[in-house]
Length: 285
Image (cartoon, rainbow, N blue to C red):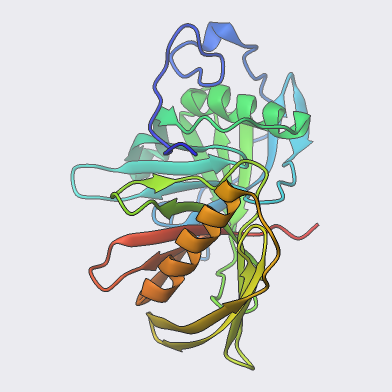
């Protein structure tokens, strides 16, 4: 298991191509008439989680790929003197900065790096390349209702997003993306393993897969405070690395004291507000 670390552009790496757009085919925009600019009912551009609906590649509009573990999203997080670009391609997470001029409806996206997870689906690979290539081409945007369109200098649509629905802790299937290794680093689960969590509000019961065995526990939640009771599990024989992962994960659940949901992400924290685990909402096919 390897910790997810920022990765920056390098001529030998075709997986991340910002600043090296000549290495892959540049996304061709779809010429469409510009929509009206933001109206009073439109959500704010910043601090909203936007979910990818479609993208344009080689002049053709493509529907967003369905990823089993996470959705392609974009978020412009306003921070004093440090606006942050965050998102996911549906396979890898990316980050960077942005510049926004609301009066002129101008937007510049400056991605800086990404995780390096292998994308096994051809559709996800295509979508990821379109995002990595197209986001730096964005110069303006339009808002209409709950939809956001990102455009190039010619006012051609590159991407269409919509506001991601607010998710609740309960009745959502959560898939583990990263967990604390006990040394201050967040690491990804073993390749091919699936660690899940689902909170049943009616019975106050938490259950899921710890990767090899099923687990179950009671829980209590009050506002953002979350505590998990004694944990039981099945006793299926597991490979040594999976067994170690299971034990680490279950220990993290016991240490949980609070949680936060942003977009499709759930984060669990201990009493010192250290991140214990990061989940994403499982996409229903």
